[in-house]
Length: 270
Image (cartoon, rainbow, N blue to C red; front, side, top):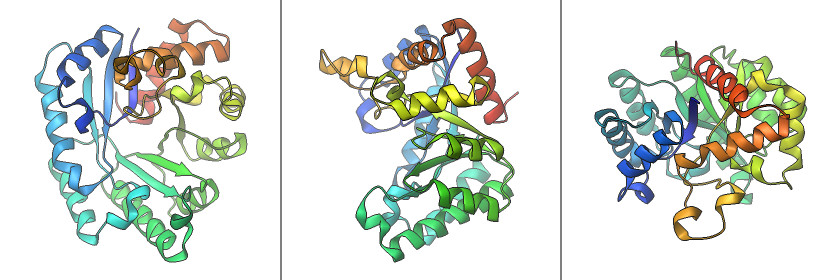
């Protein structure tokens, strides 16, 4: 089976000690490709270094690069960070811009000035994505209506992936209409994630991709036992596939094939 981990933070320090071994294990588990996602300008160097590191190793997943400025860290972003982002888009072979979007999960992020800055950085990054003809990887928490409004106002046509989707059926359909796939994480392994289960059944397989969002969003089955199992890594992607296949009542191998094609479509890869 070919599996594509469409959203990872495999560059972070959690993986510095054993990244190569984890990458080898992921490949053995069927993970043939992964995307390294940006979130902070201060981590851009490590992001690019990890990408080249993975590309230099054999028998590991193919690495793709997606630099971006994450809305959750809005207080840390500066105007020159957008210039740094553009430099990476110019100098590196990037597959997308991400992760970008809006987040009002914390009450401080709902403050009018802070939220206005989030919207400003989101719009700027959509402009960069359009300029460099890249899809985008969306981070949306409690802000689906505003994200949809900004995408429409910008007439953004390149689509991408709504990662770790947490909205409802209508919001998912709104994003699909704009050319986005819906990203499913280890949250699908949780029987209590009824909203997500409803969404994946309502929208159908042709609009889905899977991701680990490692080291976050650990599948429920990996949250018990030893520390080693608790840390989320790309190795855990098959658990996401397994739960999604159960949820959709279809064979894992058939679903894996569809998800692989969907990932290539979303990221404009041949």
